[in-house]
Length: 306
Image (cartoon, rainbow, N blue to C red; front, side, top):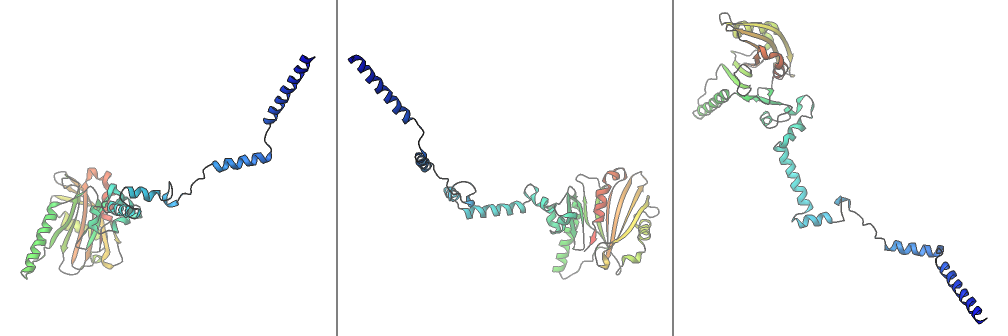
């Protein structure tokens, strides 16, 4: 009996221990869950506020990084500002030319002085202006005729010497004032401007209609009888390239055949201002004209008096 009673007591004790363990494993009540959540949230680090001026990182981090490099935000901005100005002035990677090229109808070429377009070509073009009397555009790869440039420099030096001696040199009646052509060219493709002094003031309209004036020029100056050349007029037009009366331009297209078989295709634009006649001529071999006509005609169409 004693053994049976001892066995029953041991069983009850084990059962009681098992029930207590089960109670301990039960889910916590609502209050316990809230307490645990609050404690957990307290242990989660809060995200730090980011200064928009730092772009990335902590507030003041950019200034601290710049200070480590021995500079500041203001100095950093100044350096980059001047670097941008330098890049534009130097046309670094063609950036200035590209910006000017965004303007329509090559207007970027006329925002700068003509001499500046030597460094800032626009869409494959440069601009020439001589004596402040006229301007025109020409392909970027063309070079200035050094013989013409040297002759003009020589005359300029002579003028200075004559001025110092209180003398006046007589200006030449006919003078080539500008000429450009492809590098290593043979003069069969180029553009040139000739200035001719007249005995008095000339109005271009006094030469007659464009076709009449062009034919007279071909017969008397370009291919006169006995010159071994034969000129054929293709087209002649007249148009105003500005608002002043003297900005009327006659433009005509013609071919010249030489007695040795050579044939050149030409586009000529002429204008008169006061007592001076300006004649621009752009030409190429007839055999190459078809592939180059658009570009060369654009050179002639850009010619205007200022």
